[in-house]
Image 1 (cartoon, rainbow, N blue to C red):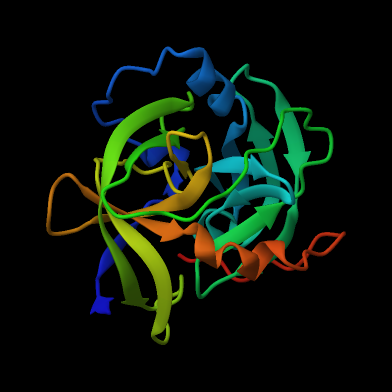
Image 2 (cartoon, one colour):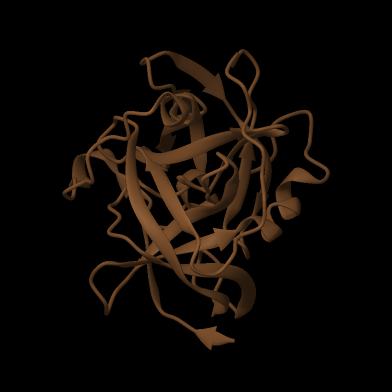
Length: 223
């Protein structure tokens, strides 16, 4: 187990900077995957926020720090269509949240477990456009980290990735070659350029196992 100080990637829209990207994946299969990925926009304590989310069977998965303290939320698909949403489940320790997917007609993606040295694609939306970043899982790790408010010390299963990510990429799915979600992007390294971190799909059940059918409290603002 390792202890890491990380830079979380939830961001105000006005503060977003778009880093250079690997060119968009042009295959029909990846285009289909991107249809199940959404830009998440919200009003969080009076400020606009931006993140990424992915449709799975139970709803739209994203990071808790993207939606904590949210007053309103909407998800925007790759065609620019907007859907109002709300939080069904949230876990501040593993930094996961599940959003309502009512009205969304895209096919949900399946999930699978990550493996070492697996070639993956990160599907992210920090530029308000769904884009793909090719990457590799460098390490599977147990991460000792505080909750999203900086309190306590908790362990989450995760992975180290060879990829640059930007504010607004939080919650973007990490997808394997079988088009399955094996994790979510949640941070980049503060010390090593080109290194980012993901939460393993093994943690998803913290929010997908028994989600509410109505909106739940989203906690306090982070700032």
